[in-house]
Length: 471
Ligand SMILES: *Cc1c(COP(=O)(O)O)cnc(C)c1O
Image: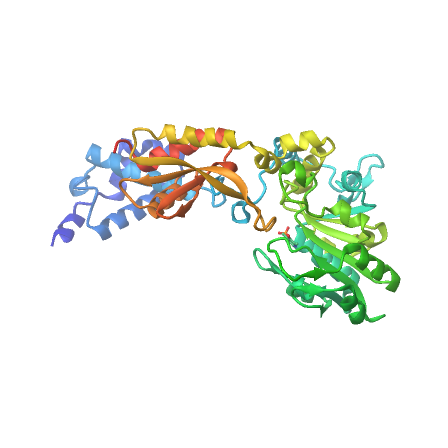
């Protein structure tokens, strides 16, 4: 049996460790890790029948053989040291890709987060008074200034914001929600479930396609109903024979009957939609002007900041949420607060926000520039086994916002002479940095709207690495 013979040719652990080829490994890593990795590599070779072919004959340290074993051990150690969470090149054209970490952050936000991470900060310390302060003061001034809200509270994410709002204002009592708004938003955020967890009782009103003011009025019971929750249908659209009660109508009803009107808005767009080429969408400012008591938005959707949930609203209402013990369990950390503050600061100058906040910038890149990025990729693949063609494409905002809104883009569509598109996609994903594209009709499609200009050479290098040279 060939395998049986070959196994005897495997070198011994001690002999290899003593070989000069292993010296650099023993210098770079603790001895125990090298030994462990070598054992694993040898065990793998044993189970396959003794490769690398004849190296280290009869337990000696044949120089070439030791070099090959060292290379394998090094590979194994490097792989083990690779972080689980690492940067990815997003070539999907989905700008706020929830699976890829949603919004990339501005340079200023990155730097602010780095500064907050590397040392101590006045997170909960009042520097003026020299005594204990509150983490919830940070960002509040900026949020008030930017949205006109009397008060603001930042928590872990928008789901937490909605949970906190409902728990604070409606625990043990009823909340009216239109049947057309009992939605699920990416990653298991379901309005009926979050409502149940908050301790509030869901009272469905209206129908899927039509809910009128009268439906709310009929369901409303003094002393039993605590609030109306209006949910922005951020990730789908209802068209056709539809009707919904407007915010001003609901606000008037809520105030007349002494209950609260809460608005789960989601997207957190602070910039005017028209300058981004997006259809009109309600923003927190408008929602507040129309009379809601509190509105909740995400920090890492179209606001373009770190993951956070932002509650904006009346001082009395936000104050109660801040005092709720549950707030402690949903609290935001210092690194996030630093990134959010830097992101918000961009919006003080609307031009600066469009320039510096990556999501806003990517939305506005002219088509001609995307085409030239695509061409740069195709040209970079000349003389390889890739066949590349440019084609217009459709990018998306993503992150459960702007459903059905098609953002024009440019793509590179690739075929490889040696393997099918899904294999090409796999190889791109599993290298360094991982590149994520999509496969369509037997082609690997890379959309340039979500690719930064500095990433284009990296993309080309990865494609060349995966595709090999020459046809
Ligand atoms: C995205 C979204 C949420 C969830 O926000 P997270 O920040 O992901 O927790 C809740 N409600 C609406 C309307 C949303 O669009």
